[in-house]
Amino acid sequence: MNIVVMQERHLAALAEIERACFHAPWSENMLREELGKGIFLVAEQDGRTAGYVGCQTVLDEGYITNVAVSPDFRRQGIARALIAELTAKAGENKLAFVTLEVRESNAPAIALYTGAGFAPVGKRKNFYSNPTENAVLMTISLI
Image (cartoon, rainbow, N blue to C red; front, top):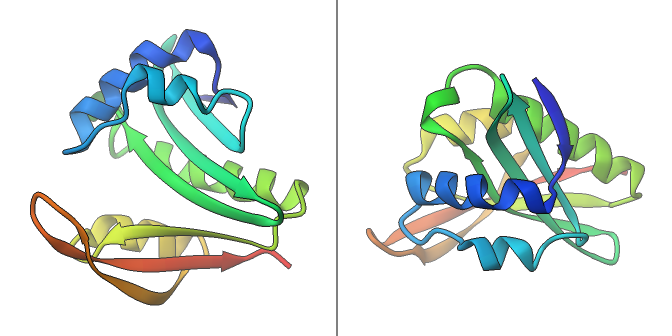
């Protein structure tokens, strides 16, 4: 597996992964708007785009927008590798912390983030729709 910065060549495949993973997927144009901003990393495996993680930055704060892995590449440690690389890059960029929201019922994702050093710091009531669900707010401090 190779992890690289998101580029134009990845956008169509990432939009397809978004559609496979989320009820409200980001479009190719939405992904394009993030090129060169924040920290957006793509995992490539066997010559294919396997997944990505996106993190918008504001001053010394990082906000993970999406973590998505193609159904064809799940259970291979790709999300774990993407999160590890993201937190390493965030530290290099002198971010104080990185935070994210995750569905309260998404136990596998919560376990992934906990294993990567994120800790629950609060909840956002009715944050998600289809179905309506609370979000767990998780953060990792980098300083």
